[in-house]
Image (cartoon, rainbow, N blue to C red):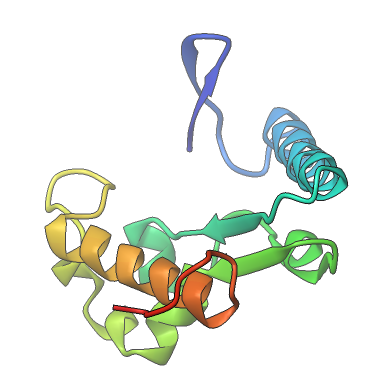
Length: 130
């Protein structure tokens, strides 16, 4: 994974002490952000989206279960969504061939999934969905 910390990039191998420390800090920051927004009555949706390698394994490198189990904010697990709509069978269709980012199809799918979630859960004011 590539993390950007204080304006510098740093590659950290999965499973190391440094990796685990950064992941724990990330989870703490997610919870803290959600609490701060909730205190201001601001709705918060945390979206977890997989890398192509995670789609192929059908599992995240990071254990997101504690974040997903937190009842204090809403979560959208894109790996679960991709599993539900069959994308995991051919994840190459939604990622660029030479890097780990979504291609146009992938971003369109993720955007639509997030928009549908926001509308279905009344997280945005909207009289008509489309």
